[in-house]
Length: 178
View 1 (cartoon, one colour):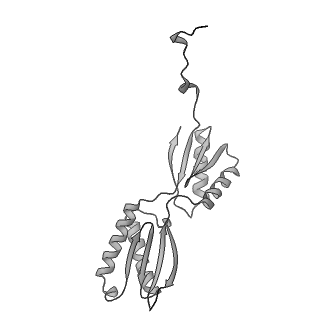
View 2 (view 1 turned 60 degrees about the vertical axis):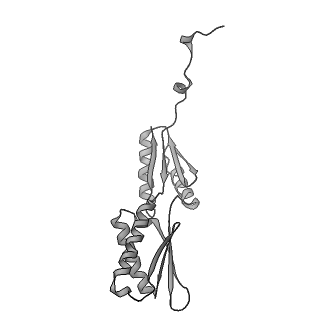
């Protein structure tokens, strides 16, 4: 039996992809870097920081504050939070560490900039989706959670559910495919 050209099947048309979106935790590291630089400039010009070891540094995704004591670290943290907010960076991206002594009378505080959903949080989102009775599935993929479902309305309901229940992380949604 021979097939004519008119009876060929386009495979792309027969395989339809399920609608999906990715739940992500991504920060704009350029804005974070600018906020750290602006904080450093302000620390350098403020009278109450003159003659002190007060400094701020961004290395990879760690922001290190160094100062004379807890009070000075708190002041620098406030300046940093203000600069981040002005730059449009949600301060929930910061995972603020404890203040530690580093010799003499100096202290430091290291804050990590979150980028990518940690495994524990990914599992929490996945369990939330499973327990929701929505007709969607969630799969964990390298720092993000992909949610797939048959209907666009179900996906939008899943987004609303995630936004409502996971309020401690500045999650966003991208790669929405219909």
